[in-house]
Image (spheres, rainbow, N blue to C red):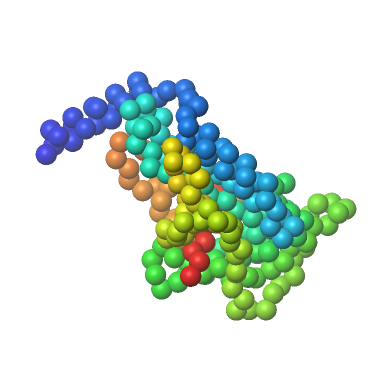
Length: 221
């Protein structure tokens, strides 16, 4: 068993050190960019939808793995929504991507591991004089409701993802996942950055980037 582990480590190290290729333009990457542009062009209640390509299309960089991409995964969040951990005060400053009116959703633990509730807690309004945000508190118990992209191209639901038909036999299906942006790392995932990892993946730079914030998937029932 130890010998197998040593061989696996040698092979993994070789692949990581020699098979990192300059990102090449592939059909899935073009399709993902096209879908992201389509989402970004939509306007949702005065705000913008901000997309991000994830999954195998974004992560595969070793040439032999590229043909095995099964679909295009796109996560997107609304510029009018922000999630904060329970007990955190509403922020007074936000990145430029956010709208001047932002609904703040408080993250509350649920009885299921890996799942939380999003309670509508504050409405942030930007001050035109200095760019800071002031908060008005909502009544307790109001839960977030998200708009869902409706289209004749929707062919199903896969967990939190809406599955979109590519519209062309040679292209892949697309999983769209509506998320809420959180600017800090969640207490519910506090152990993830320091978790023991085999083979050094993801690397420390990727872990650091993720630790600066996250996207929370929204599950529609």
